[in-house]
Image (cartoon, rainbow, N blue to C red):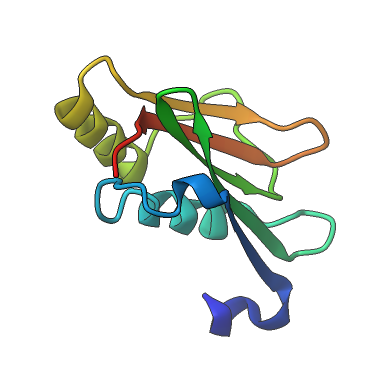
Length: 119
């Protein structure tokens, strides 16, 4: 992706110190970040900005991936990456997880995953 977008790709990772040792399923964020890079092109700049954050939220760890694209519109359907992630979370955590997609004010999509905090 760096080759494709060159200097037009900006990725920021912000991890709260209290979750740096948290355990989360392997490759949980990979399809979410990949989707953000693939579908999150800012229509004004033709660039991609992705921010990944991790922080404690009570007894959970909250992971968020935000991009600078158009967000999701009417008729949106989850692709393979989101569907597999949702199913994997369901199998691992049952009702004890959250996967939420929401359009951001001013553009972009925010994907939030919350799972029980473990170290």
